Length: 110
Length: 121
Image 1 (spheres, rainbow over the protein chains, first blue to last red):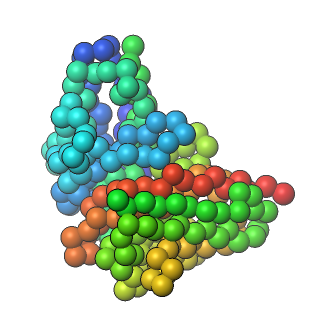
Image 2 (cartoon, chains in turn cyan, green):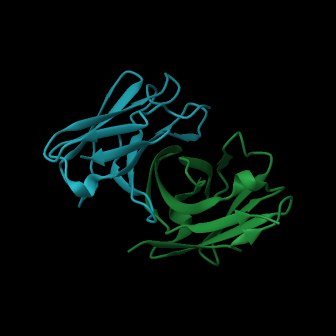
């Protein structure tokens, strides 16, 4: 099972919107609505920001939104803020009943 | 509030066995799936294993021959054993609760703070 494909880096200016893609296959992203996204700041544990493709845990800013089309999921961060600078990972359940993470994307706020 | 706390040896010699423990508080381990995930220096997150108290366990195919995960109800903790370690197993190891729908695993939350394990002679 290969890692899901994400862009290595995405950048934007404060206030702008950015989108991170997460491309898998019909065996993972395309098979279930079980894509989740995690925000990782250096030295800290990963933090869940989106689950089941589009849902946000309580306490997570509504500037984070998720979507999916076919085998590609996406995370959009709107109104980009300095605190959003972090690594972001997608994750999906698969038809093999295992889980696979994305390759990770570093978000830089210019 | 659910909390997870990993503990480990800090350093393991090549070819030896790595053993980790994750103490769970705030919830019974019998009610959920649980997982181990790692992140090697400068690399991405890698899912290692998941298990339920009832024994529904699965492993990353790339690690399957070397890894064993278990859930201990009396102690309310998780454990992970990884045999024949090499430098490539140097990583921060995290435990996490897994939200599920029957046997479909949906997301990881919360996570422990992680424990760094270095494989070095």
